[in-house]
Amino acid sequence: MAFEREKVKSLIFTTNTEIRGYVHIPPGGRLTDFLNNIAKPFIPVTDAEVRTADGRTFKTELMQLNKDFIIIIIPEEAMGKEGSL
Image (cartoon, rainbow, N blue to C red; front, side, top):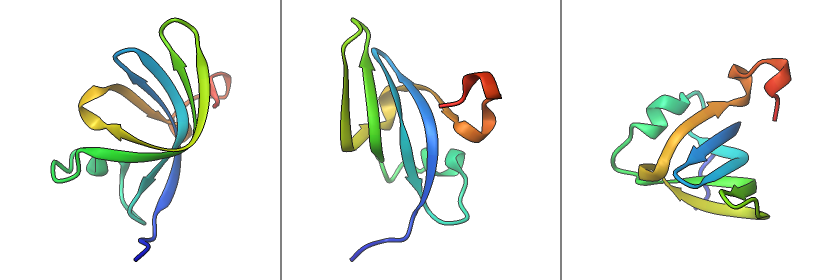
């Protein structure tokens, strides 16, 4: 059974990676509410570009990101033109 989701283009920093991709949240929901839901420890990220601390990059269509490792997450809509994704 597929669930309807909204895609939020985001920049995510973890302890040792930078991820650019789409976070999928419930329709009409807020990213912060989705992140604060302790019943779901992982968030789906699609069309992700991952850059590691040593400069390596790779792309993946889908990843499940453990919320415990997120340091910063910035939705594209909150970024200025210079910081666009």
